[in-house]
Image (cartoon, rainbow, N blue to C red; front, side, top):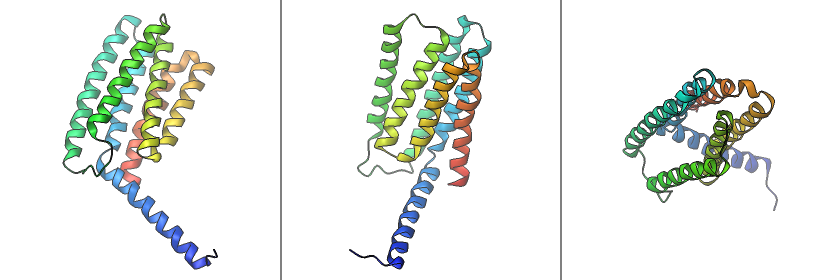
Length: 188
């Protein structure tokens, strides 16, 4: 099959237009808000891990996770009005996926206990990134590069800069998610 240069250019233009519309739909859906909310939670939580006494860290993360869950629920409730599920993955199934993944994190930590705070943090981040990677592969491939970047950052910080692991995760992990959220909102 021979394709003329004009036909090839038209096909490429059509693909780029579809990609642009997809990015714009994701941006206008409000999905970027999850990155901002959870990036802020990571920023505060990991700074707490770096500077607070170990006794306080569990309480801090529990409070932050409750706030994050409530804000996520609120975002989903607002998005439901604007987004129609046309054969995609229903929201309840996504909620079940994340709830079950959370239970697996607890089981994994229980099986590998005793762990120090840095190990617990790394395990949680890696399992969350695995879940996010699954969502990216199944729903929208656009989140895969960010997910792989955070995974690589986690491993580099854990193995190469262990004393600064939580600090790095706060500013590059949490701050990176916040920046990505604003980038998606403003540039897509």
